[in-house]
Image 1 (cartoon, rainbow, N blue to C red):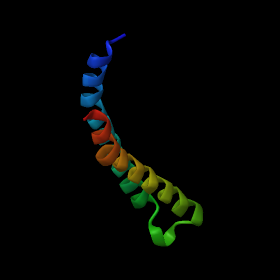
Image 2 (image 1 turned 90 degrees about the horizontal axis):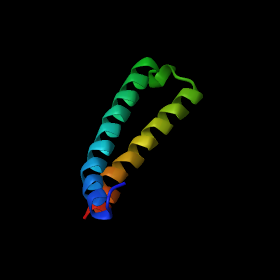
Image 3 (image 1 turned 180 degrees about the horizontal axis):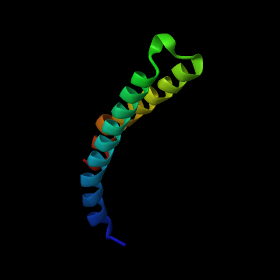
Image 4 (image 1 turned 45 degrees about the vertical axis):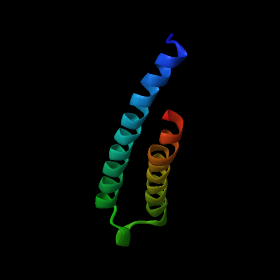
Length: 73
């Protein structure tokens, strides 16, 4: 248990690092999936999976650049 002020300080340091790490992992996943399943040779299911990976990257980046600054300031 942390007092509210200390938790806020901890959260303001951890959230940007967490979302940055997730963005890097997301980018690696997208690159690996794209390498293993080229767009021309992939099935519609694989294209859908790549779309979901890309949308998760987009949502994570929105968390990192839009919502995190709103919550830690």
